[in-house]
Length: 158
Ligand code: AMP
Image (cartoon, rainbow, N blue to C red):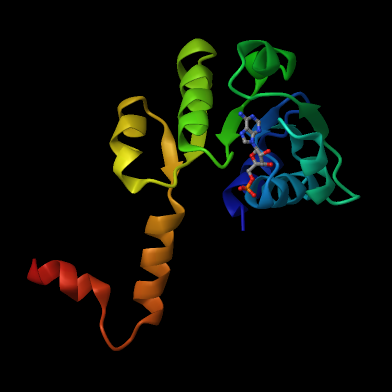
């Protein structure tokens, strides 16, 4: 996991580079723990302070309480110097807003957003935002596991 990041870090380790994660839920906290364990600098933002309980005791990053859609909060997190912004809150509208601010206002090269509704994906693509959609990923995994009715062959028949 994250082999690309490990290779890149070995070649080009920047002490002042960091990743901002919006949303310290199940996915956000796991990602923050993993990236931190890999030696990456992480700043994680959540509007609910209690959410930071999900972070491992070994988490070496910075936590910030606030609404990630607020420019002042992103600014305080030092978004101007972030190498990547990953928005993993539980609301698609919030994730799209954070991703748009990161991309358009702060010119962050790598912006990733979680998207529950696969139909919104085109909106993100328009803005050059990469998306991860749990519904689509789950379908792909089910397709791999489902040996009796391959979903791919159902698409071919359409
Ligand atoms: P989960 O559904 O477990 O992935 O959790 C999503 C996390 O996103 C929760 O910890 C929420 O408190 C957090 N969250 C939701 N909206 C915002 C927001 N606007 N800014 C920061 N964190 C948020």
